[in-house]
Image (tube, rainbow, N blue to C red; front, side):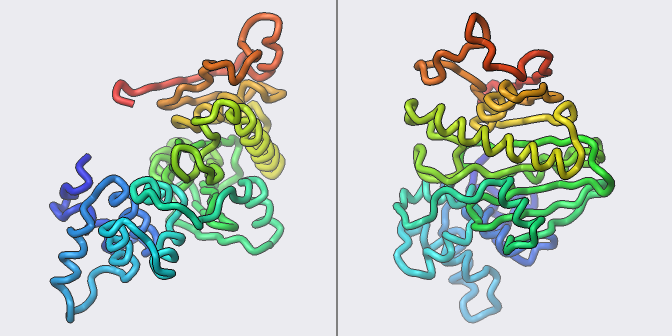
Length: 318
């Protein structure tokens, strides 16, 4: 899609995203949308020209939106105000902005694991919790401790009897899966959906990434760390809601698919299913995962493979 093109209302996309007063959209969500469009080379002058036309009249755009467009126009963020606006972005939007602007730090790295974040919320600790608009079958929340790794949770109105964990792709985030899970709400009213965000790391740019795919030597190490985090999340959610592994589905897009497959094949008890979308999955090239294979004398590592149902889809243009 053309980031400088019109929306369905024939308004330029950047101006449509900048409408902070639009029903159901928060100011922070609008800023994230602006950052994503600018990160994909939307022209900041579209908004800045309109802002100049409105000088002396009622402001149409938020001050943060104007600052963000000014940052992209000059391709730099020097002032404290500019840095504060960038730091307020959700991690996926910030990653796209940094990729386009080629900005160095100082932005934080890492982030609290999803299981620890959700446990902190249950323990009544200082966790930012934002409830989103509910569906007919679910309520939705975003939980975060440090803004680096928000977790999106879509919980049934009744007792959940199944769990689906969705993992995003490189430089994306939990919030970017919101529209997809909303579409599944009515057909899966009994399912608890949990969408974690990857740690922020330096991997082909800085942003949420499950592992550093540019350094084969560190790939297995970071995959193992993410697998441990994911197992802790599955265990805690399963215990909290009484959901056994046989009622758990792992799903992943792109890089998230690699983590989902790596985890699902090594669980002690087989999961209900594995969904892989637009991903290389487990491509054991370059020897980084050796000697792990799916057949032969050393195939006993894949304890969760026997009987696992898998759906793998890949678009022609992915």
